[in-house]
Image (cartoon, rainbow, N blue to C red):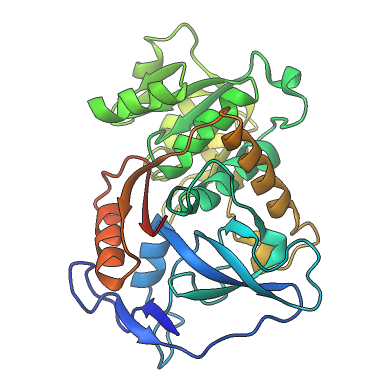
Length: 339
């Protein structure tokens, strides 16, 4: 069958950065579903994996995590799905990616596709939704079940117009939180306001100065979705004592972890691949939360965040999607495939 992969690290504008290849057909076993892929999305993690030199073999690296499609076969342990079901999911970073005609995925990280979304739009939702949901309700101290507990609590989202930020704003508002988001361009400021942010500050300016314009000077929690190291002092300046910070962006070297000790800040990471990578006991929670997100999308409580559609699913369009994501100027999500 046809798939799309990369043999070497090269710029996304290079025609060799993502190429069409042939790989053997696959058969599902255990909890696996075999999905006929209809559409995929590109996230920052796709570009990072494409550009990674470690973990390469003689074959091409097939990337891609977000996908939507139709179940065409199931393993012997599958109980949640049957052939013909329309599904969406975000895959497993330890396995072959979704950039292929067919894809194997564990049923426990899959959900039925939102009924009101076509395949293209649905493919843009899983990875960002899982990341935002887990960050808000597993890592930060907010409740997805009892929204009354969240009333009056303040959250700062750094990079509100990105893929994860666009969903996090909406989920936080659904949960009853007061949301301040960051954005730096007129179009991104308008985007986050349209998604429900109560205030917008400029992440290119010192947060302490930006907060002087607001009727409060600290927040209960921060979700950092861009450049953790650059915003470390900024976050310290506006977080309440005993507050919580969650980040999805690697720090690298040279950060002063002791800075947050005086305020007794709790810092945590969010990686949506953790449950599938380590086959965690609660792996099925990703099935459950994607099912909940589908309900919220179908009921109109939250809005889809796709802003760019490329058809069909081929190497050229995947390269263009990678280029758009790497530009650092994407608002929302880019998807590739068919309706």
